[in-house]
Length: 358
Ligand code: PMP
Image 1: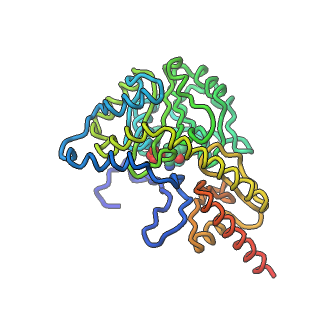
Image 2: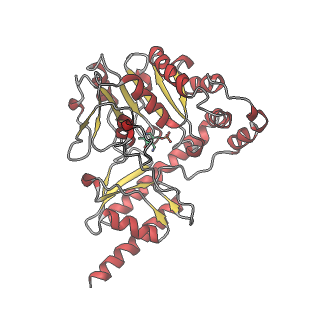
Image 3: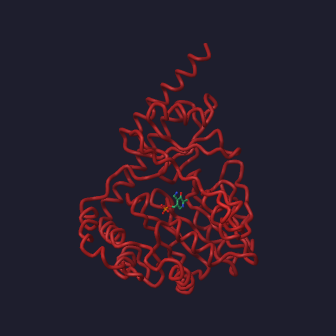
């Protein structure tokens, strides 16, 4: 830390993203990216922007929001686009949480929430998940705090029924409830249909997972027009050109490829079923997932040990050091071939462990 670093950031613990190794080629199952390439139309849309790259992108992202409106059946005025959904989460926390309206989120959830809260000096309450990692909706009913819920949750993959989200929304009319739907395309029902009904709801989403565009950085939020205007006030005060022309073009093209991406999600769900069944047959406990990853543990080997041994064998999965979940690993669902290789390598590791005991 330099001696110039502002006092307010001195205790900041930055978010630690999943490894993006540049040294060797791994089967990468650690950051919930899509194993499928974007379709040709998306690649062409990106290269088609080369000539216009000298110009700033449209700060209103008019064409992209119009296409979003068409796909999601929601007016463009209820939509804001962002540089990945991390950015929209940051803007929403800044806009709707402070000393008077502290944040509340689960103890086991997306690690970025805590980091953004601390970055912006927003007080927060951490609400423990139940023993089985599910959310107890009653903990959030009438809470009177700005609430953020990842649904499906990460890293557990568990989905909270929409009726429970609605109960939480209804009982906190003076507070904003942010539902982070980064993984909704892999299971569960979106809260988008509630945006018209509740003026305190923000639903966030991303093109990083189901739409194969993690590197392009494109996220979005749906909300009441007034909430969108507040978010835009901050967006325009920080980075009005937050979505660049390449990403915007990629987003529009991707939205027009609905059946390609729907089919990819279907394949991921099939592969998830395969992975869950295989892991269970090897003695793993697997949390039922509605996302493009599974969260699993076994008494045969510790979470960190399995992560390290698979890494040596060329497979990256995600391990978190947090005490409550240190026995688990989060494994991104990839292609059928990747899942078969993963299972083979896990079998090898378990055999090695067994032999080392002898
Ligand atoms: N929400 C959750 C629950 C996530 O797991 C992630 C990805 N790490 C994000 C939001 C952010 O994704 P992105 O910024 O790539 O849109």
